[in-house]
Length: 442
Image 1: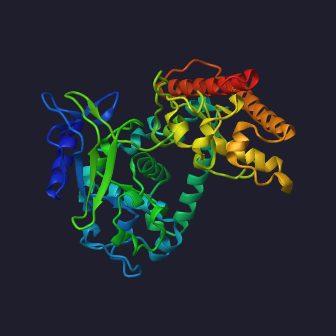
Image 2 (image 1 turned 90 degrees about the horizontal axis):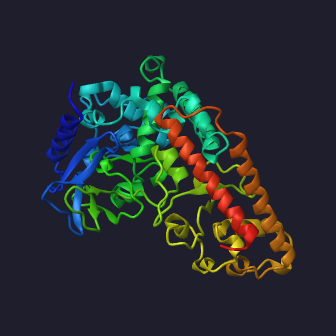
Image 3 (image 1 turned 135 degrees about the horizontal axis):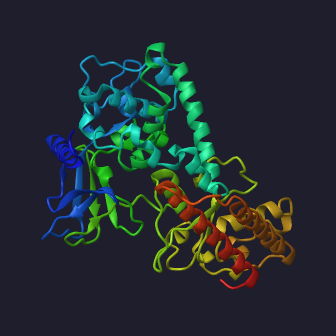
């Protein structure tokens, strides 16, 4: 059986055969901590604006490959054309009645089932394999491990994810002939979900305009796997640039900072909280003096059915204006919210605004109050009191949920240890926010 180094070496050759490259000063490094990552070679360095990865779009894998050249779809892209001798496609009904992101997952399943016959097999061999999914994303964890998250917003999100996956798979299989049922199993669908969730990129960041204009769906209705490109690990402080050359049909990952020999070269997945990193990638960032990534997500009654964390507001471990609240500051709707009442200092301004709108609904005389006025407390005292009480009640309930659902036994594996760390940070977020509200001291 090939070692991971041999598989990564083969992946690099496969990318290079298509016209791609990895910066000669950078190597693919594999260990138990980082798994696969980019690292600067000994006696080398990476400078500002140096390209780390160049990837031909012909090596990408997505929903587009499932419909490329299909006679019932007006979409064809020669750089992404699927090199299958029999040009076999999923049934037209399945392709037309299934969401693009589901089709993309089934296409990945198809290529996995094809094995060495797949155009992407060299890439697929470097991915976490289906039999190792229990240690990846929390939604795939064994139920005993998921229980360690009970009482946190991550636990609720996991139940939503599992329910959605069940519905998606059931609907898709109804559209496929019985001949698919033996190999296209639910565990394999969960694997494909995990791979796309933890490794894919938004098409709007990668796909050239010429291709996106001919799509039969919205551009970001699916996501794209980018072999080699996806090896870079996340740092919210990493300065990078993603670019696509439409004429050359290649995308590049460029570093906007310097790296010395032996240092890991990072990608940046965007401004994501630990809750989002845990659910989407299976890790969290540790709390440090100069950076924290600990936030609790809160829904409001105005949107109670919001199904994902992107539709929520955040409460921060430290004041939103603190220099270490990197993600928090990025989510403030207004720069003026940097100056606010101490009791609002740990809250995303959109949450305060949503509560204000709910409380004052129908009161025309105070309808036009600005966000800045609300955050500074330049609003009627009765309204301010109701906002503060609502926040205090919500945080107290969430804190109680964590406390009453404390695990009954010690963590015995990596998943459970990660869950304990996450729930402890959630507890600290809620306690710090409540303390600032009670003391009036941000």
